[in-house]
Length: 156
Image (tube, rainbow, N blue to C red):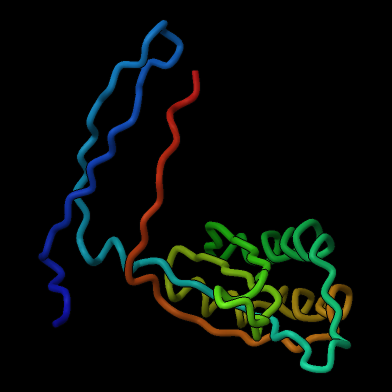
């Protein structure tokens, strides 16, 4: 069963307001969004497969501190909104995970993600890979079908 573009969802956000006072005042914020809003974002996901022979290397510090900053700079003009880096510790049953790390790069639209992959600056992004790993990245693109994010209380 597919979603209709006219179907509306309610998002109720209950968070303390006026935190500078002696007591928090609770306020309910209700926002409506449609399927169109949820699916407008698109991702580029990159996963790095663990080396079966144990000879793989991955410098997570370089990846987060340098490579992802390069990604931000290269793709800012085409709509990058956020990125996350995940390092995998293993599977719940204790067996090793087939992947050691991944990055999820979020764009404002599918067009933005596609333009990022075609941008001249992307050559520099891909050319940086040997600086942090000898593993071959697996790149996938996809549209965001839904998400949930908590919100933190406002700052004073």
